[in-house]
Length: 526
Image (cartoon, rainbow, N blue to C red; front, top):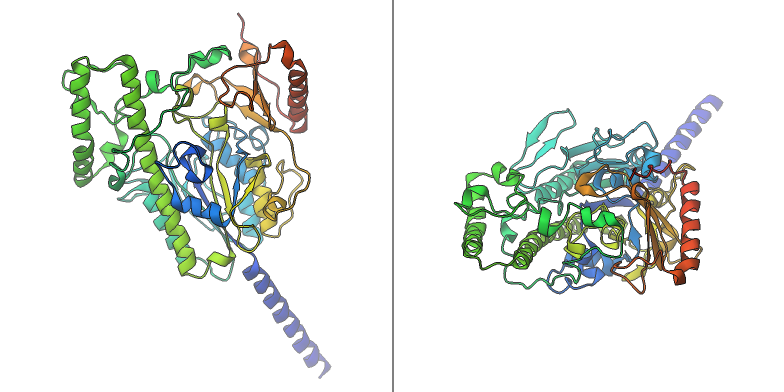
């Protein structure tokens, strides 16, 4: 009888423990991480700016209205793969080993967020752009684009290693697949889903339904579209990411070679039309119906000498922006689809929704497209978090945050310990409205080797100033972000800035020591 009672008691204890574990698992919040690629904050209307009225993003804005918008969110290395590795590891690029897009694949023997959440009982998935030259680990399900992926009829790598092509548009398909996974996931567990879009990354190919979305809209030009790069590092003038000199006619601007007849356009004309080549006959027909007449009108006027060099830049800018904003419009639409699914399936109240992008992007500022530089437009990254019942709706955070902070934040949201090796800080106290101590400076490091002729450079940013170090040319730039928000004039050599220069230089070397940064590249021989 005693043995029977003991057995019954043990069984009840086990059942009670299992019930508690299940309850704890169920009560922990789901985390939906919606991630885009190269989404400039000025192309999100919640952030304001001169595009807010002409290119609104109502679904992303809704997250800001119902959650918290981070006004000072930055990346640690403005390039696709390294930013993603930083988010998964909570460490700067030199610590997680993924320092450049052209480097080796991500070392997944190290601690990662996905492995930790999976081990803690989360059902985990990543769908869409991965771009870490490796197969995802720590995910119960994954389906990823190879490399940069394509907008039209993209291939997706399957978990068995095979590759399948799907007809449609990448942003729509990534959302379709994310919703399909949510439908079939293990619903006894909380979920962590990384829904990661290719858009609005180059080649800026909008879906057919939005090809003409901005044709009749006057898109304002940035004041620095014709920047002369004076009063700053000599490396700016040798860049290869200008709308004027480097945007490709077919690849970027959608003016194919077979449309031009005997019209000779100025260089560059290096690449083909990979998106057009993937299209079905019906897709090509719709594409040609939109771009064909516009291209012929431009080519005719160009051939007749009606365009000055500046006129050509204005035309390129308009074409670039219409296409870029068309891809953003599709991203915003699909954010709305994800929010609708959560609501219709009773998941909205226990799901934290995070919207971000791997870095910012130049929309004509300094005459540029692309990213990489430590200047504001590419160092800033959007971050909006809706956490029902925790974060005050329509709130905004002013603290300096960075993508090293994402992993510890998600861990604390999930009730997990934060490993000592993580270099970031949890944003949970900020999300809870606490006004405690926070960092007052950020470290930046760009390691790529020559892409777009952007040199390796390093620096520190505070609330009011930015110091950029260009070791190879042995140059330093210092900017007063309050007096010179467009970063047009370095005050590094200004005698009146000596105290600021000394303080920023000291902080730069302090952060390099704090984060155990590797040796700087040597200056080039002159």
